[in-house]
Length: 301
Image (tube, rainbow, N blue to C red; front, side, top):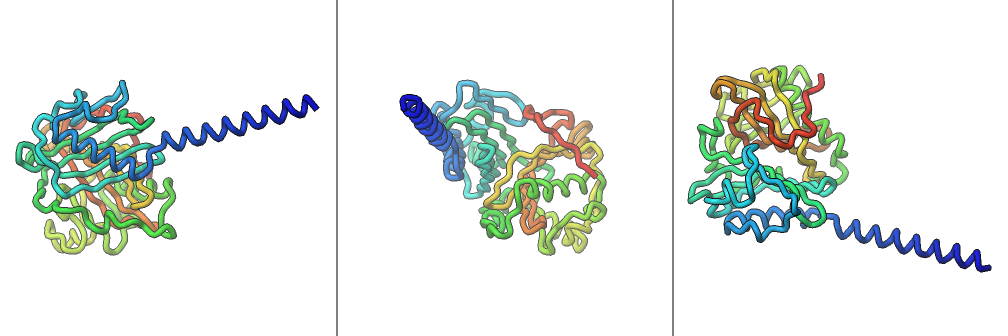
């Protein structure tokens, strides 16, 4: 009887501890709203020039354009407002909150890419890229970035959502096609109405004026080869059907000797197809690592 009682007590304790662990884990999780709030808090603190207002870990790391800085430096010193354009890409499974957002810097609009890593209800990583003008971005149609496109921020019907692995696989057709200079050869699964924006300018899809009429066909359009291309998977927003990649397009001396485009590409993927591509990009040295290169990939063919 005593043995039975002891066993019962131990079993009860295990159940209680397991339950407490699950509650603690749930409390530590950061859901979509939590991640969005961290982006808002970051932007508000940046404009107010108050980095101490943020919840950060003791070992938080911050980079701007691949350079390590202290929070409060870089864009923080001159940020003066937040424009309406803001596309949040939220990945609760990885604790990643990313955003493409237009910010005023001393009264002039700039394009900011922001990636936050959240753990234990605090920011542990901050990665940013800032594009201030056409010389830095090759394209700079910032006046067109008034609000996010409805197609990008619309939740995907659960029945049409891709699995996490499938969402990444679909997005990876894009760097594979870029590398060899043909989306046709890799048979990239673009939807019939797919489009691509780069730094605010429509570069492919219906209504494209970059190189009509060929640019209206995103799959069949002529593109350059990018043999030195590499990329990272940054986030997967399963609710919105967005996969975010940071792509180093590889050296292209037309942007200056030794330079390359560093491009944060947001892919709207669902139903087995790529429906949209929206990118913020900047010209930088081709051999400049992002500083966060723990899982750099090359296209598979």
